[in-house]
Length: 249
Image (cartoon, rainbow, N blue to C red; front, side, top):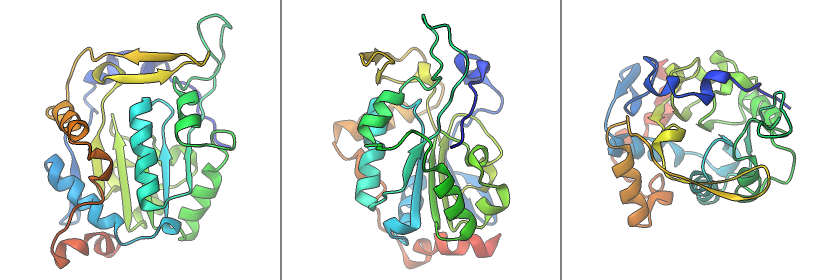
Protein backbone atom coordinates (compact mmCIF):
# COMPACT_ATOMS: atom_id res chain seq x y z
CA UNK A 1 0.00 0.00 0.00
CA UNK A 2 1.36 3.40 -0.99
CA UNK A 3 1.19 6.09 1.68
CA UNK A 4 2.04 9.69 0.86
CA UNK A 5 3.08 11.92 3.72
CA UNK A 6 1.14 15.14 3.97
CA UNK A 7 2.75 18.18 2.40
CA UNK A 8 2.51 21.35 4.50
CA UNK A 9 2.13 23.55 1.40
CA UNK A 10 -1.04 21.71 0.40
CA UNK A 11 -2.63 22.91 3.62
CA UNK A 12 -2.08 26.58 2.78
CA UNK A 13 -3.42 28.94 0.13
CA UNK A 14 -0.05 29.34 -1.62
CA UNK A 15 -0.69 26.66 -4.25
CA UNK A 16 -3.93 28.34 -5.31
CA UNK A 17 -1.96 31.17 -6.92
CA UNK A 18 1.08 29.09 -7.92
CA UNK A 19 2.61 29.61 -11.36
CA UNK A 20 2.20 25.84 -11.80
CA UNK A 21 -1.58 26.13 -11.48
CA UNK A 22 -3.74 24.38 -14.08
CA UNK A 23 -6.18 26.97 -15.39
CA UNK A 24 -7.75 25.49 -18.53
CA UNK A 25 -8.63 22.06 -19.92
CA UNK A 26 -6.28 20.52 -22.47
CA UNK A 27 -6.41 17.57 -24.87
CA UNK A 28 -3.72 15.61 -26.68
CA UNK A 29 -3.80 16.69 -30.32
CA UNK A 30 -1.09 17.23 -32.89
CA UNK A 31 1.47 15.33 -30.78
CA UNK A 32 1.07 17.67 -27.81
CA UNK A 33 -1.35 18.90 -25.19
CA UNK A 34 -3.39 21.84 -26.43
CA UNK A 35 -5.65 24.08 -24.38
CA UNK A 36 -9.33 23.89 -25.25
CA UNK A 37 -12.73 24.64 -23.76
CA UNK A 38 -14.59 22.49 -21.24
CA UNK A 39 -17.18 21.13 -23.67
CA UNK A 40 -14.65 19.97 -26.23
CA UNK A 41 -12.36 18.43 -23.58
CA UNK A 42 -15.23 16.43 -22.07
CA UNK A 43 -16.38 15.23 -25.50
CA UNK A 44 -12.82 14.16 -26.27
CA UNK A 45 -12.47 12.25 -22.99
CA UNK A 46 -15.88 10.63 -23.44
CA UNK A 47 -15.02 9.34 -26.88
CA UNK A 48 -11.78 7.86 -25.57
CA UNK A 49 -13.48 6.02 -22.74
CA UNK A 50 -16.06 4.50 -25.07
CA UNK A 51 -13.30 2.36 -26.59
CA UNK A 52 -12.82 0.38 -23.38
CA UNK A 53 -14.74 -1.93 -21.10
CA UNK A 54 -14.76 -1.73 -17.31
CA UNK A 55 -12.07 -4.41 -17.06
CA UNK A 56 -9.72 -2.22 -19.15
CA UNK A 57 -10.07 0.81 -16.86
CA UNK A 58 -9.09 1.96 -13.38
CA UNK A 59 -9.85 5.07 -11.33
CA UNK A 60 -7.53 6.64 -8.77
CA UNK A 61 -9.60 9.12 -6.78
CA UNK A 62 -8.68 11.43 -3.92
CA UNK A 63 -9.91 11.43 -0.34
CA UNK A 64 -9.41 15.21 -0.43
CA UNK A 65 -12.43 15.49 -2.71
CA UNK A 66 -15.81 16.56 -1.36
CA UNK A 67 -18.67 14.12 -0.88
CA UNK A 68 -20.31 15.58 -3.95
CA UNK A 69 -17.20 15.04 -6.08
CA UNK A 70 -16.87 11.50 -4.74
CA UNK A 71 -20.50 10.81 -5.59
CA UNK A 72 -19.92 11.93 -9.16
CA UNK A 73 -16.87 9.66 -9.22
CA UNK A 74 -18.96 6.72 -8.04
CA UNK A 75 -21.53 7.42 -10.75
CA UNK A 76 -18.82 7.60 -13.40
CA UNK A 77 -17.42 4.26 -12.20
CA UNK A 78 -20.89 2.71 -12.24
CA UNK A 79 -21.74 3.98 -15.72
CA UNK A 80 -18.38 2.74 -17.08
CA UNK A 81 -18.61 -0.53 -15.10
CA UNK A 82 -15.25 0.15 -13.43
CA UNK A 83 -14.63 -1.96 -10.34
CA UNK A 84 -10.94 -1.18 -9.90
CA UNK A 85 -11.04 2.05 -7.91
CA UNK A 86 -9.08 3.32 -4.92
CA UNK A 87 -7.85 6.44 -3.13
CA UNK A 88 -4.35 7.42 -2.05
CA UNK A 89 -3.79 7.25 1.74
CA UNK A 90 -1.84 10.02 3.48
CA UNK A 91 -0.46 9.74 7.00
CA UNK A 92 1.77 11.91 9.14
CA UNK A 93 2.20 12.70 12.79
CA UNK A 94 -0.84 14.00 14.69
CA UNK A 95 -1.46 15.70 18.02
CA UNK A 96 -4.55 13.69 19.06
CA UNK A 97 -6.40 17.00 19.49
CA UNK A 98 -6.95 18.90 16.24
CA UNK A 99 -4.41 17.33 13.89
CA UNK A 100 -5.19 13.81 12.71
CA UNK A 101 -2.59 11.30 11.60
CA UNK A 102 -4.77 10.74 8.55
CA UNK A 103 -4.07 13.76 6.37
CA UNK A 104 -6.90 13.08 3.96
CA UNK A 105 -9.74 15.35 5.12
CA UNK A 106 -12.50 13.15 3.68
CA UNK A 107 -11.29 9.58 4.04
CA UNK A 108 -14.58 8.64 5.73
CA UNK A 109 -16.57 10.08 2.86
CA UNK A 110 -14.42 8.20 0.35
CA UNK A 111 -14.93 4.89 2.14
CA UNK A 112 -18.69 5.29 2.28
CA UNK A 113 -19.43 6.85 -1.10
CA UNK A 114 -16.96 4.82 -3.18
CA UNK A 115 -17.85 1.65 -1.30
CA UNK A 116 -14.26 0.83 -0.37
CA UNK A 117 -14.30 -2.53 1.38
CA UNK A 118 -10.54 -2.73 1.94
CA UNK A 119 -8.15 -0.25 3.53
CA UNK A 120 -7.62 2.88 1.40
CA UNK A 121 -4.68 2.24 -0.91
CA UNK A 122 -4.99 -1.54 -0.82
CA UNK A 123 -5.68 -1.75 -4.57
CA UNK A 124 -3.14 0.81 -5.77
CA UNK A 125 -0.50 -1.85 -6.43
CA UNK A 126 -3.00 -3.81 -8.50
CA UNK A 127 -3.69 -0.68 -10.52
CA UNK A 128 0.02 0.06 -10.98
CA UNK A 129 0.71 -3.55 -12.01
CA UNK A 130 -2.21 -3.43 -14.44
CA UNK A 131 -0.82 -0.31 -16.11
CA UNK A 132 2.71 -1.79 -16.21
CA UNK A 133 1.47 -5.06 -17.70
CA UNK A 134 -0.78 -3.41 -20.28
CA UNK A 135 -4.04 -4.84 -18.94
CA UNK A 136 -5.27 -1.38 -17.94
CA UNK A 137 -5.63 0.72 -21.06
CA UNK A 138 -7.54 3.68 -19.64
CA UNK A 139 -6.60 5.38 -16.38
CA UNK A 140 -8.62 8.16 -14.75
CA UNK A 141 -6.74 10.02 -12.01
CA UNK A 142 -8.81 12.50 -10.03
CA UNK A 143 -6.75 14.87 -7.92
CA UNK A 144 -3.81 12.47 -7.63
CA UNK A 145 -0.45 12.05 -9.38
CA UNK A 146 -0.09 8.41 -10.56
CA UNK A 147 3.71 8.67 -10.51
CA UNK A 148 3.46 8.80 -6.72
CA UNK A 149 1.82 5.38 -6.48
CA UNK A 150 4.35 3.40 -8.48
CA UNK A 151 3.36 4.16 -12.08
CA UNK A 152 6.27 5.47 -14.14
CA UNK A 153 6.17 8.25 -16.72
CA UNK A 154 7.10 5.76 -19.46
CA UNK A 155 4.13 3.60 -18.48
CA UNK A 156 1.81 6.61 -18.60
CA UNK A 157 3.06 7.41 -22.09
CA UNK A 158 1.97 3.97 -23.27
CA UNK A 159 -1.62 4.35 -22.08
CA UNK A 160 -4.08 4.82 -24.96
CA UNK A 161 -6.21 6.94 -22.61
CA UNK A 162 -5.02 8.81 -19.52
CA UNK A 163 -7.52 11.32 -18.16
CA UNK A 164 -6.59 13.47 -15.20
CA UNK A 165 -7.88 16.28 -13.01
CA UNK A 166 -5.58 18.31 -10.80
CA UNK A 167 -4.72 21.65 -9.31
CA UNK A 168 -1.03 21.89 -10.27
CA UNK A 169 1.20 20.67 -13.07
CA UNK A 170 3.19 17.62 -11.97
CA UNK A 171 5.23 14.76 -13.43
CA UNK A 172 2.14 13.10 -14.88
CA UNK A 173 0.25 16.03 -16.45
CA UNK A 174 2.34 16.33 -19.67
CA UNK A 175 1.44 12.74 -20.57
CA UNK A 176 -2.34 12.95 -20.26
CA UNK A 177 -4.71 12.56 -23.19
CA UNK A 178 -7.25 14.84 -21.49
CA UNK A 179 -6.40 17.18 -18.62
CA UNK A 180 -8.87 19.13 -16.49
CA UNK A 181 -8.11 21.79 -13.86
CA UNK A 182 -9.80 21.23 -10.53
CA UNK A 183 -10.79 23.52 -7.69
CA UNK A 184 -8.85 23.85 -4.45
CA UNK A 185 -10.43 23.64 -1.02
CA UNK A 186 -11.19 27.38 -0.94
CA UNK A 187 -12.74 27.37 -4.39
CA UNK A 188 -15.61 24.94 -4.01
CA UNK A 189 -18.83 24.30 -2.19
CA UNK A 190 -19.77 20.92 -0.77
CA UNK A 191 -19.35 18.72 2.26
CA UNK A 192 -16.99 16.23 3.89
CA UNK A 193 -17.23 13.69 6.69
CA UNK A 194 -14.62 14.48 9.32
CA UNK A 195 -12.58 12.12 11.46
CA UNK A 196 -15.36 11.93 14.04
CA UNK A 197 -17.93 10.97 11.44
CA UNK A 198 -19.62 14.36 11.39
CA UNK A 199 -20.84 15.98 8.20
CA UNK A 200 -19.14 19.32 7.58
CA UNK A 201 -20.09 21.89 4.99
CA UNK A 202 -17.61 23.77 2.79
CA UNK A 203 -18.34 27.22 1.42
CA UNK A 204 -16.67 28.84 -1.56
CA UNK A 205 -14.19 31.56 -0.61
CA UNK A 206 -12.64 32.49 -3.95
CA UNK A 207 -12.71 31.39 -7.58
CA UNK A 208 -9.57 31.46 -9.72
CA UNK A 209 -10.44 29.11 -12.59
CA UNK A 210 -12.58 30.88 -15.16
CA UNK A 211 -15.80 29.07 -15.93
CA UNK A 212 -15.38 26.07 -13.62
CA UNK A 213 -18.02 27.06 -11.07
CA UNK A 214 -20.62 27.95 -13.68
CA UNK A 215 -19.87 24.74 -15.56
CA UNK A 216 -20.28 22.52 -12.51
CA UNK A 217 -23.31 24.39 -11.22
CA UNK A 218 -25.06 24.11 -14.57
CA UNK A 219 -24.32 20.40 -14.63
CA UNK A 220 -25.84 19.91 -11.19
CA UNK A 221 -28.90 21.98 -12.05
CA UNK A 222 -29.58 19.93 -15.16
CA UNK A 223 -29.01 16.70 -13.23
CA UNK A 224 -26.71 15.35 -15.88
CA UNK A 225 -23.14 16.07 -14.80
CA UNK A 226 -22.57 12.44 -13.88
CA UNK A 227 -23.14 11.34 -17.46
CA UNK A 228 -21.34 14.11 -19.33
CA UNK A 229 -18.57 11.64 -20.10
CA UNK A 230 -21.08 9.21 -21.57
CA UNK A 231 -23.52 11.20 -23.68
CA UNK A 232 -21.19 12.65 -26.27
CA UNK A 233 -21.01 11.64 -29.92
CA UNK A 234 -18.64 12.65 -32.67
CA UNK A 235 -17.18 11.75 -36.03
CA UNK A 236 -15.32 8.53 -36.64
CA UNK A 237 -12.10 10.49 -36.98
CA UNK A 238 -12.59 12.11 -33.58
CA UNK A 239 -13.58 8.80 -32.00
CA UNK A 240 -10.24 7.31 -32.95
CA UNK A 241 -8.32 9.91 -30.95
CA UNK A 242 -7.81 7.57 -28.01
CA UNK A 243 -6.46 4.79 -30.21
CA UNK A 244 -4.14 7.16 -32.06
CA UNK A 245 -2.64 8.67 -28.92
CA UNK A 246 -0.13 5.88 -28.36
CA UNK A 247 0.88 5.76 -32.03
CA UNK A 248 1.42 9.51 -32.28
CA UNK A 249 3.83 9.50 -29.36
